[in-house]
Image (cartoon, rainbow, N blue to C red):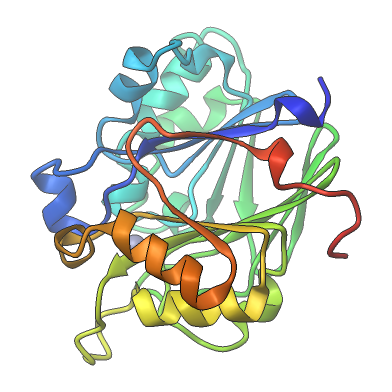
Length: 268
Ligand SMILES: [Zn+2]
């Protein structure tokens, strides 16, 4: 399949504890179809149910890979059940799992030990490393500033690049690491409260990223309560005006076809 088929579908757009535990937005992660491969990034609570209730249905048995950017519950809680689903109930050794070391080998792993051998391959994500799933290539970012080991992702598609800027505090180097035509940003906070222990991006950080990266489109997701209260779709309109970049607030079930945004060799 060619680049025309590349799409992402949001099985959830909620982030952080309150929105997730109340399910004010779903938290199923992002299903991607890149170069004909099916990937699920960050399957939080409800991911399996959201796949199966999706229209058209997304069958976890069709997954080629599950990727955890980090082990926090809202990114990983359905990983185990999806590994079972991906492997047809541990019958077929199929599919690849990518996760940081501490999501697999720490004392509190996100992936159960007994499932590790049931997949075709378990690959550990490391800082600024490249990975290949058949002819689909992606790289990890520098380590994020978050409370557990966390990496963002940048995929090279036939006609351009798409980045997923997952949970982190802002630091200027993020801009260089995520140069790409399409960026997906986890914006938990409307306004950062200023405490060092809150390691998430806020709307102002988001604006800095968009202005610095200058993608063709930026998609906001992983909203916490303060973002939801301020209506992400309105904030996205304001950001579009302020930055000159098309900014979209994701909603649960939203599918974005990437062909409109990718142009070969625009950004190296
Ligand atoms: Zn997190």
